[in-house]
Image (cartoon, rainbow, N blue to C red; front, side):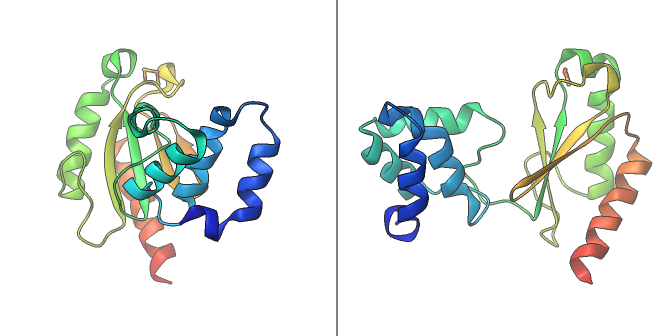
Length: 163
Ligand code: FES
């Protein structure tokens, strides 16, 4: 239970907002901190705390690419394939990345390192192909990428994890 685990953090979050429901996003972020995704029980608990319907909370989780409702690999690699990026080859880039990683979009590499996701505009349209990598609290952007550079990055991440 979040309330038992993080009483001070939750109190501090509530103190920042005049209306309870405004605290939904930081509370979701808090819930996601532990395992990299938000469990259904946590969504329910947050909904109860804020006097919201759980479907409203789930809709927020579903809308934003920074929130997740399923467990993933250590790194979430999120490739933008929105139209401007597609015009710069994002679809082919993603397809080739899938082949090189040996997984499909939405899947995780067998070693649990990378979960490959397809997302909408990340705000760097003219620098596609691009993706962001999420790992717990950090997000890094990688622009003007090639499959070769991406696979080098994956190997570097793999080494970091294995050392
Ligand atoms: S459309 Fe891909 S970053 Fe904007």
